[in-house]
Amino acid sequence: MSFKKDFIWGAASAAYQIEGAYDEDGKGLNIWDLYSHEEGVVAHGETGDVACDHYHRYKEDVRLMKEIGIKYYRMSISWTRILPKGTGEINRKGVDFYNSLFDELITNGIEPMVTLFHWDYPYELHCKGGWLNDESSDWFEEYAAVCVKLFSDKVRYWMTINEPQVFVGLGYDNGEFAPCIKSSLPEILRMSHNILLAHGKAVRAIRAGAKREPVIGFAPTGPCITPKDNTVEEIEKARYQSFDMWPKGFVFSNSWWGDPIVLGKYPDKAFEYFGDTLRNLIKDGDMEIISSPIDFYGANIYRSSSTGTVNGYDSNEYIGCPRNSMDWVITDDALYWSAKFLYERYKVPILITENGMPCHDRVSLDGKVHDPNRIDYVTRYVKGLKKAAEEGADVMGYLYWSIMDNFEWTSGYDKRFGLIYVDYLTQERTIKDSGYWYKGVIDSNAENI
Ligand code: BG6
Image: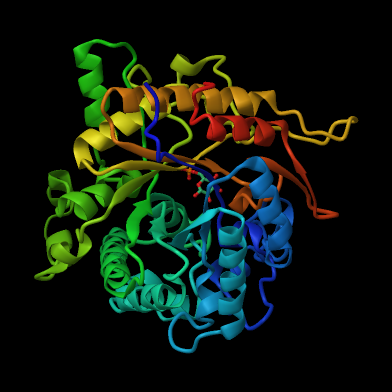
């Protein structure tokens, strides 16, 4: 048994993390352009101003992708490169850039998959209240409609939003990520509802405007809880905890976002906790918009925590557990359980939109980048994913995060997730051992794992 024949193999990136050219060719500013410049936001005072300079080097990058054998490339569009003010006037040079990039990908046999929003929110819209403004879902709908009109002759795969858990949780709840805000509970509820509406309106705009049959999803993350042993009780506990939500920090949960989007209703616990404050936000027809049918459920998964832990992954269960350079535990069965649980609950195909490992990579004296830990990590995780598929989960594909080393948000450039090593001083690229190895995985549809 194996993955299906048309299994999607590829790698992912996001505009702000690789493009650079932050104020070139008419691009408008976004919140990361601004807040990364504030003292204390990003490690070592680094910013995404230049990043991997992908804006100027995309041809070389596509050539390297081809060398690695990438068949699908998940990338995001920088909203303000297309609409500098977030809505209204279109920036032709931004459009030209993405058209050239899509052409380059397609000519090289690589299918583009587009995320509309990977956290780089237009600054002009932020000044109008951002997601708190009840017009924000219309702004996003306009942006989605513009992109579909411009690019749907070249792009079939669309993801609306990336990790609402993280951009809301870290950006507007604990204030670590741009725009570094700590919001009140009613504000978090309101912006969440607006984001869900934005997602739903974008799904409809894509479906209505696409020139070729679109394949639409979103790319959430969320806790993945695994059973500490294979008893029925522990498996049930893990399933329950994977979709549980709590009165504080609930934006990080799976069900807060996944249930409205796929099941068309907020989790019961949300009404228990927030009562009329939540009820009053929901207008007639909202839940139908939010749950406009999607074709796949994306999942960004890097790690899990076991039902045996007291306090998530920071407990004795993981004493001596291998960790990556972000200090995240390496938990081999994360993709197995999450693909299984997500498919059971939501019953739409699961696409692993991100999974990968940051290592302490460097160019060795022989000029190569040896990263056996990354190869070992992907082998273990993909084995788990394969097992989930064999046991009946509809798994559509796997996208490694990331195609190349890049700007890891507040951690800056130290954390290297890439299949391609980037020397940020010279912008020289080197395919890592894992990149060459991944080609074998793709070519054999993971029969070699
Ligand atoms: C992605 C980011 O969407 O999520 C990556 O763009 C990052 O740079 C990853 O490493 C982290 O996932 P999580 O679930 O820990 O936020």
